[in-house]
Length: 234
Length: 234
DNA sequence: CAGGAGCGTTATAAGTTCTAACCATGGATG
DNA sequence: CATCCATGGTTAGAACTTATAACGCTCCTG
Image (cartoon, rainbow over the protein chains, first blue to last red):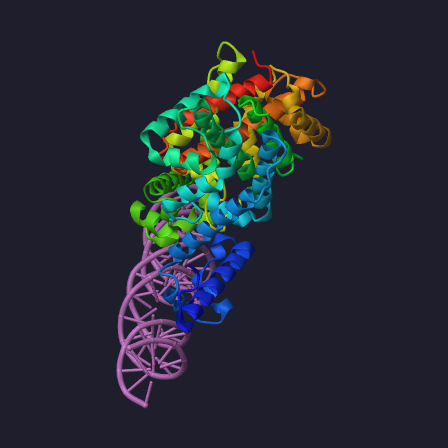
């Protein structure tokens, strides 16, 4: 899967990797702004247009960085071990999400919206985002939605009826019959959790909490706990 | 307040206004990318560097747009009439927030993070964001926090002790003694609501819900209702 | 061991923001 | 009222950006 053949292709992949690495360093140091082909090329030691042998355009390079960011945060989330009960697991997952974002704020910013000016999110990022959130589906499959969140669950049930991708998402992470109420609840909980996570983490990363002595982790814990209650998690 | 004096200043203000308007149109049509001084100038009918007579830099122009966006969404929120009870008011406020963002997605994106590549959010945006969220403070002042959200309220209490801005924020929108438990609760609820609003609205605006048949308003209602419960709102 | 694919180079085009130098108009002032 | 200079517009140009074109060298491949 990784190495097809030939020293040519091998070298090519090495250079691509180096470009990605340098781009990431530039991103960390100078923001998205810093991902300039000239700057990257200079830092690598070759001049300008050579990069176009490896990436068709700056946007394609950004696209790769976005994908890698999704993969990375997905890995971080999936690496969280199951706790004793679903509540604890939910908290652990949320903290892992937050920790990753705080650890690599620039990369989270790359994800969090339209990263670069004219950059249009490629379609596959949506899918990547969903697989990254997979473990949440498993957690919420262990509970049942209360009346409070029933409308959301209803929409998810409708979604499963009309879109095979929904069922696929569910089955990939939890072993439940799409007909059961737990099924719709699992998806509903995940979407709600995703939204809350994104909200607090995004405000944290963009520095909106600075000066108000508010720890994002406190907010997150509180939110996830109420969410756990809304889904009757053990 | 608006017109100081002189036809000179009058004309100047007109041109500045026209620039802002054209910039907004460009933003809507071509994204942040489209806010290029050349393009704007061309569209106005003057050539290039003339704009620098009116805005010191592109960043300053962006800064103005960000401020106006904050002011606008703040106006939209503050225009929401009080409903019969706090719960209903909270829902109405949330829907107003969502409606504004959906109506002007590009402008919301301008707010939602670091809009342009190297653009550093000016300090006053934080303050503007807070005043925009003011009505929420008033709403949550009508309830008391449950144990669920107590940790958040505790942090807010600590914040009020160390930062006069916190108390000022509270007093500007609700008539409560900072010592009361309702005080910390009001701020805690507002921050929680802000985080949730931003989360769902942001995911909606960036199109993450597309294809999953999920209406952001359903999510929002659900979240705000649970939040109302967590603060024992009538 | 040819031959050419792949890679790196420079030159160049078309953008961007922003500064500099210059000039005309017209409001403010003696 | 006549002057003056602040204000606002112009073009030129510098320092960037992304991206393409045309040109060789090298070294893998058949």
